[in-house]
Length: 495
Image (cartoon, rainbow, N blue to C red):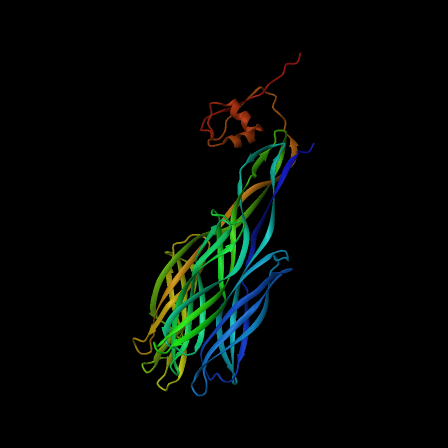
């Protein structure tokens, strides 16, 4: 007769896999650009879709070019290019939810004839979430050891919001270029909401006077709350905030020699709340009547851990893409950014990367040049386990102390979010084997190994833990060296 068992199913949404594809998007500018001073690109996703064995993602890249024309006037141009890309992976299926973030990793410039081509290398971080059904043994006509296991389920949320800022600068002319980078400093789950806080670094390159350049930056704080019905105070979460668009207005007050700048940002937010659920599972089972083959399963869940924030000031001699001398006037620093990874070293983990920016100079002949600067850095970080890191560069300054050398200073704001991994094992079922022959003796004495617990002994003796404990009231488990366990069996007299 087959042993009756009771099965249960736990349903969860979890992160199945991550993909990190790259794609290149190109844009052509006309013959007016005689000398390229600075080039930038931003990208915004319109969506991402999972299909059979692939993820398709699409959006728009906006290219900005600052250049000198044939008369040495500084000019600007902008163009948008729509793109569609896909990445293949055998684990992807249509029912998955694809969450994608995109960043411009590099912008290259090349000239073909009279035209200038900008190529943006776009890196995408795609997380794929899928439903997972966990079937586990809940009870049955056997002896079972209940032990709850923890499973993490994800609750996806998202939304859009706005941020704005207003500030004064010295009087400027046309805004040539602007760039925005976002630093998320904190993510907090509250009842019904996921809250993200941080700051936007707005960098502006503008004309001052007829043909001089000036750059400045502004740190704009933001706080956004995303509705999420499942969110609660004891949960963890993560959020990605990107700038979907920015509107800049400059109003000059010539009498005061000042300019009021108003910046309005459209922010897109994608969040995920991780809920740790306790499931009443079984970790072991046996039968008094027959041998059992115990079938086991395991579950690896991941969630978000704590956030660690660091601020470091770095300085040093920068590597340059061109030459400078004392006849050059350093006018502006624009497009500051940083790239970094955490690496394991002999003295622990370090954050190693490079801070990048474009230096704009005016030569003795009145013409302008753009020079790419890079400053490597290595910073010790005290973090354990898997984590994601983002580095936010601000306050970059450059000066020529010795001819031909540029000294750079910058502030790095580092946010490290730890990953939380939970491993669980449980019984998924049993298969019935040969019958167990009961001993016909009235008393059995068993000499266990030191350290054996009540469950292990009961399983070896094919008795319930209650029986073993009742027969040996003077023994504390786990047992000590030299102790004996006694089993009594009731016998009937045949007349």
